[in-house]
Image (tube, rainbow, N blue to C red):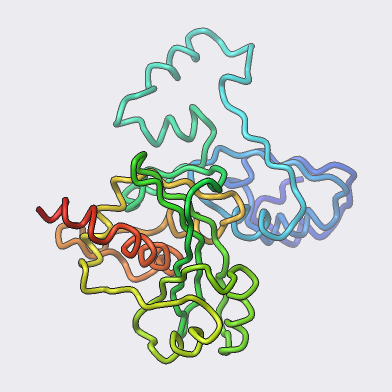
Length: 280
């Protein structure tokens, strides 16, 4: 229809089936929304080189089926193209290329602090706890965390990501996911909020004197991170959490609310073990 980037042209015809090829390259979300609302069935395809509007506006809000396919699903792939793909496997310089164009997984921005992550199921066989970061002018953010220290894997599941909460709002949100005995490690900056929540939950502040943010991030980079598919805001943070000053070990103060919450729980879990070994 020639509607690329032209929202006025998307207001017109209705259709039974809408198919958009390379939707992340050709149209904005606003154009998609107009086309989608006038279609009975919608198909989108894209190379998942990085997040776009599908991940934060469509997947969390609309019923959908997400089909991941890669070269292994194509029996008609020419031999020379197959060789070209396989030659990039296991080469560090092609790690992100292989993830996107080889395996069909969501890629990452160059320079993202946490590169070693993938979607997966939360390991329910491991002990778990929660990390909570208070929002102030940002979202209140809580994640469920389980850490397999032997295999160096951290499992993440987003639980709360919402701004503008009163105390009662936050208490109700936390109570939706935690019982009285579940441990919550929270941002130490708001002692008053922690003391109020302590009346209802097993919550305590993180000890930020254990190590610097940069030291903890360095430890977390040694782990593989498994993120559940319903954690869309967390995935966005992982893909956009960058170094502000890599040499000084200073990350940007953005895309870090859920990651900070997970960092609090990580610090509490490994204190006295990995820190001692790492610090010598």
